[in-house]
Amino acid sequence: MLSVLVPIYNFDVTPFIKDIHKQCLLAKINFEILLYDDFSDQAYKTINSTISELNKVTYLELPENYGRSKIRNRLAVDAKFNKLLFVDCDSNTEDEFYIFNYINQLTRHKVIYGGRSYSSTPPSDNNLFLRWFYGITREVKSASIRQTEPYRNFMTNNFVIDKSIVLNTPFDESLNGYGYEDLLFAQELKSNGIEIHHIENSLIHIGLESAEEFINKTANGMKNLAKMIRAKQVDKRIKIYRVYNKLAYLHLLWLVKIAYVIFRSTINKNLRGRRPNLKYFDLYKLYHLVIEMKS
Image (cartoon, rainbow, N blue to C red):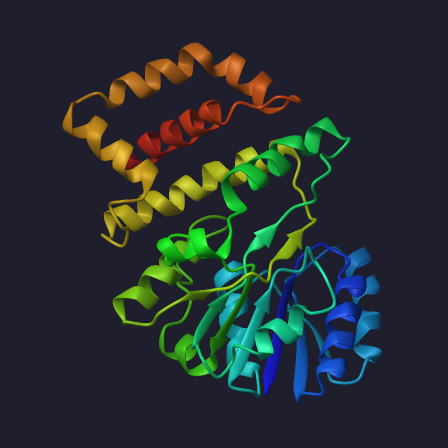
């Protein structure tokens, strides 16, 4: 009935998977849980390998780092059930009804997105604050809000999908590293007339990256976005692309470079502090998109 698919990279998934496993048993469904480790550090492999002792759980260590898209495609191919539940490894459920909430929707929709949430308590570590603040400000949305723009509000952290759809519309493995593989996948679904249904069934994102890591990953995301723009794979209504196009039309892209150079030290200090200004973060993203589009 349900294959729970979990790509793992440098995170202890044992508490999360024990919870998911327990919920599947209580739901009295046929299920499997596939855990594929994407070439994590040995310490995490040692910890996570113990979870394979649970019935209906398969743990596999990949021989190299596959990346975010390729590992999901591999999981989909190997899954034995038609309904696939993809979840990010650095997650927690909000309650004991997580699996049950999806089970109630399986026969009604081919793609279901449950949402993302964050702890209401800010992290005490200033280094983690940017990722938390960005998450609660930009990523946390109710199902009713997400449904108004179902494809643009889709993320790959927590969704159910028919196996046949992933096999026919796989994740684009040409995208490297972090950023926009979920947007591209959603747009492929849209192009094929496949609807995304949004429900209230969030997973809590607990694997907060440091400000430095999140900033660097975002720059890599701009590389992927630029690649998608050049390939004409991007919806022009996406905010950052819309701003880019407007500035390009007005021949003002040079202004972005100057503004970033002027405020670089202020931006770097602000984004790594306790009161990050997301407008600075938006300027950082736009600057890197401009640079990538010129390369």
